[in-house]
Image 1: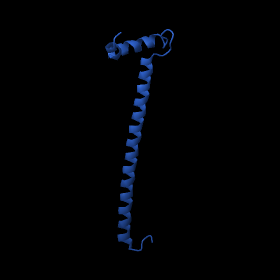
Image 2: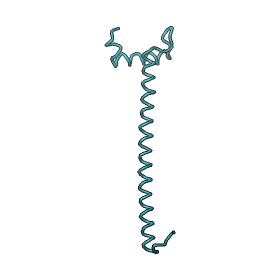
Image 3: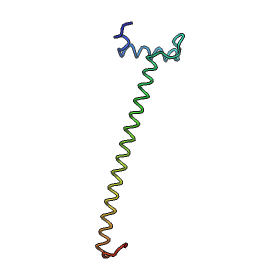
Length: 89
């Protein structure tokens, strides 16, 4: 098998199907290097996806905190104007 065959999508799909049919048993070894690399890449992709998700959620929470803080400050200023300058001192 040439290098082009091992890198083609069809070859990868055929090997994955063979792995599923054989339940991972490919003779003397349980896991080929191709299977290991696919597994490793999927784990790395999941880590990247989780990091991006965590960063996005953090930014949303920070943004909401800033908005809530601004609303509270505005309402406090309205109360000071309405009830006098010594309100909440």
